[in-house]
Image (cartoon, rainbow, N blue to C red; front, top):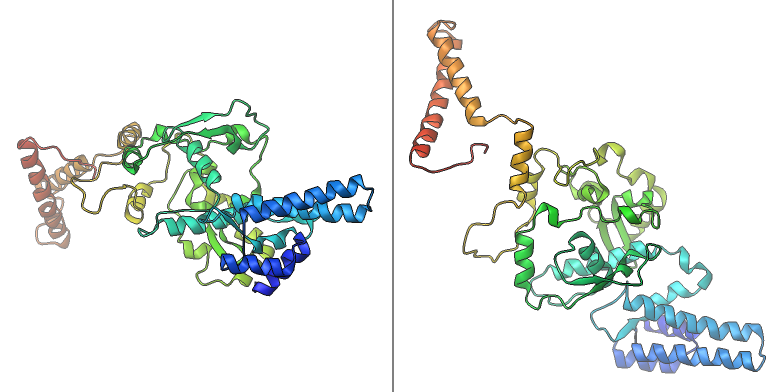
Length: 391
């Protein structure tokens, strides 16, 4: 949006003189209005509306002033919440266009817009040179408290009821000043420290809509972000497996117009199908075989300095995984190797394979491969060292 277009929009929607608007833009060096300016616009129009009512002016004039005050209030609201920026003292007037028709405000996809902006700033926050963050911070904080209730300090609002939005439940405390305490908590987190699906008791207020299973690009304005529910199936109470590559869901380089077309025309085709969602979870640690190995290869699950003083801690749910494996009676690989060796030796000893034949040579090669492994294992145990035989 050009500066002239933005000035015309502010003049038309908020009733501010065009020259005054251009002066604000010049001071802010962009298409911005200070919070105090927006508050003044709201107060002036609210007062004019009350005055028009008292003087018996026409309904059209009263509605004009009221609509202007409502637009100023909504612009201030969204720019301090879902569209917040790092400045904390101005609003972006480009969002005023969404309030041209006040009767259509509820028809915009505000949830997708909030996710796009939050993920945009989360991407920036991952850079080592960035020390600030913006976006829908109350949403992010509520998500963290819901899934990791023991990570920080918070209290439940005494006036909260289940009919209210879930975020209204939390009153965050001061938290920790140093990031080291959070890093230690995350490095040593246990399965029981995480609430994978915290909204089950709130579904009668806010049901899970089917469009949440959409997998692909979301956009708002010139920003876009990937929405990939197949990578967080545990939040939907399904067993997590190795997900498909993100490029298969969100094609790289897709234009904004193409993103709009896909969302409008191919929404049903982009949903995560029932077979991809997998089975419902039984235990909190349920996952498909091979997922943890894949996760530790592609992710950064341990928050440690580049030059760590010691080896990374073992997976926090290792004990749980071992207990689950023992309950399933998973085979011990060392015992399997011993069984194969004994069977091969018996076959050679009893002459089941005639010496000089290809079968006899294959059995000898198998025996030669197994004996060094078993001998090495026996020597290490003799020195009093313990090794994980399941690797």
